[in-house]
Image (cartoon, rainbow, N blue to C red; front, side, top):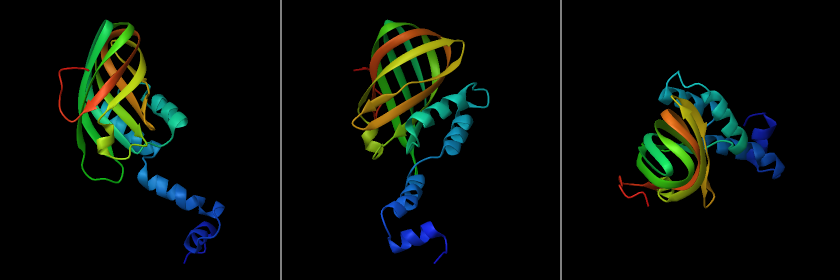
Length: 190
């Protein structure tokens, strides 16, 4: 047995306050660190994604460590009413393989333009791959002119998704809508 006090406390099961290091260790094994996410996002977006580290830092400050992420691509357009379609792969900490994911959804708001984006979505408290396959409401504000990086949050039943988008095109405005994540590509956004 190690002489380290917190390891000894965990091994002996002494006191709930001394068990915190074991809980923190278990959380670290089930979630991604900021360095892991930043490295994966930089590989996915490429070295040229300006502001990526700032956006990842902001999300970690607000939400902590995610237990899954989705890498994908999407296209969207709007003139007051908008549509968004995308596809990618879900990766979960501690699970091998990846799960194919599609998403589509409508929006309404003061929003105009179109863009194509690479999307790196952080997932928080996602119990399993099948939990992503539902509708997630959200509010989105976009300001793309040629390129940019942005994030918004989508929440449902204790699960939070934080799509980080780096896109090209022209898009300006804000909207309210939802994304429906599904197992198969769908044309109908509803």
